[in-house]
Image 1: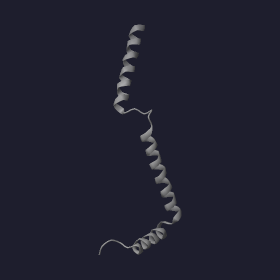
Image 2: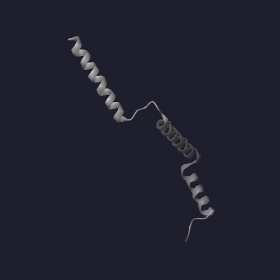
Image 3: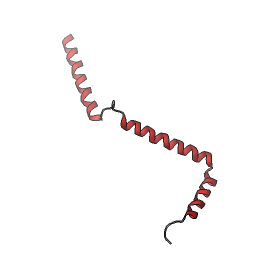
Length: 73
């Protein structure tokens, strides 16, 4: 009643292959790999700034624009 032996895992693998087919499993693996790769690239991108910093920059830019508008009037 302990863990599953290697034979149990082989039977499970055969059943999964029969149910889903190799092509569908290969596509699912490829999609999962691309998703993980995209997530890692997104985490490494140094150009992106946190949302808090974006809000501060936008408010500073809008203040500058409003000052320019006042100066032109």
